[in-house]
Length: 173
Image (cartoon, rainbow, N blue to C red; front, side):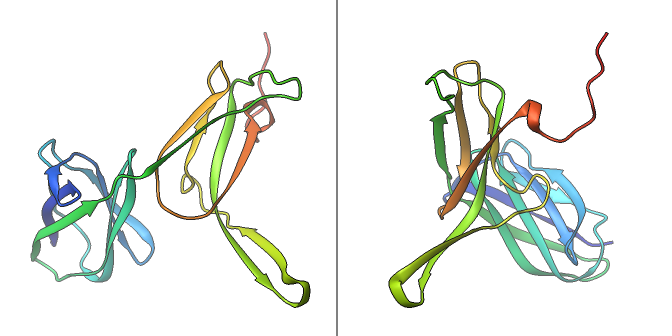
C-alpha cells in the first residue's frame, strides 16, 4: 500500500505543523496532521496517478502539490511543501446607526473584474465555492472580524447575520 513522507515549512525554512490532505480523482482520500517539527508520514493511501497533496494552516495560503504518482506498495519520500504566509483581512460590521453588529458571518469569495465592449462597461463576477472552501469569520460583540491566511487576489466580501443563515429551526422552551 503506497504512502508519502516529507516536511512542511514556511518560506523554505522554519518547520511548521499543519493539516495535510491527499486527494485522488477530486475526492479526499486521506487527511493527516504534520508533527510539530513539520514532518509528515502517511501510509495506506490509494495507489494511482495524478493525485494531489493539499496543505492548510489558518495563517498561511493553501498549498497544493499536484500530479503525484503513487505506485502500489511504494512510499514517495522527501516531499517538501513550502507555505507562504497569507494576508489578513480585518474590519467592522455596523448597522445603519453606526452601531457594531455581533454574530455576523463574513465570507470572502473569489472575484474577477473585466472590461469590455463599447463604453468600457465593467463587470464583476464572484465565484461560489464548495462548503468550507471560502475564508470566513464571525464578528465579535464589537462587530470586528479577522480572516487570516488569505491568498493574494480579488475578493468579494459578503456578510450575513447568523440568524439569517439556513439551518435547522430553533426550538424554544
